[in-house]
Length: 173
Image (cartoon, rainbow, N blue to C red):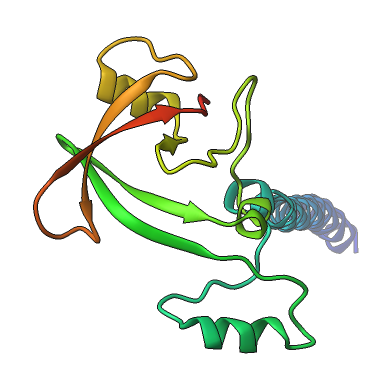
């Protein structure tokens, strides 16, 4: 009878140790899964919160539509406001390239274009706004607002390279 009691006590201590280790591993696994879930949820919320800052505050963009189609879209009840943006020409500066675009007032308000310091929205045909790095590449010197730059561009990305003197009215980082 003593042998059976001692065997039972040893078996009980081994089972208790194993049960404690299993309990700890279940708690750690649960904590890890909770942390992963909360982190993913936080990243998704942060991305949706910052999307309007990074990409603009618009919900759809249509390309290649006529003025009649734009009017048809703007009168729909689901649409709060519409804006027009048109890519006019491409600029090639060595390995870098960009697009010259026109934005109307609504499109500018819905985009992520931010004004800095003394800058203002271009209103004339010979005015341009771009980031400071664009003007540095063009001018090979430190640009200032109001400087005149010669921009090489191609209408619709085709044909010969044209050059036009423009005044810079926006500098940003």
